[in-house]
Length: 105
Image: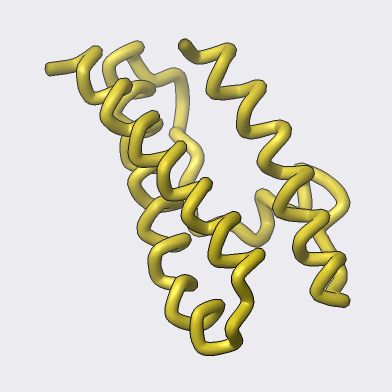
């Protein structure tokens, strides 16, 4: 499951960057740049397996929430392509959060 999520996220980074460029904006070009822009926190030290899963759940939920908060902006701009991308991302992140929560329930 973790490898599947990792692979899917790598593809998502490309999709998001392509959309940003299609809108005529500069897209972050490295994971370092994405890390600088994120509001997700990295764990300190070496967390336990359960703590890692809980952190992943929080991250998945935070990303879905962020995507949801952007929907009104894209809708107001009649940007159907971005709305579609946001819907796809919310679907993936909500499912991932659910699957991860099932591991610690």
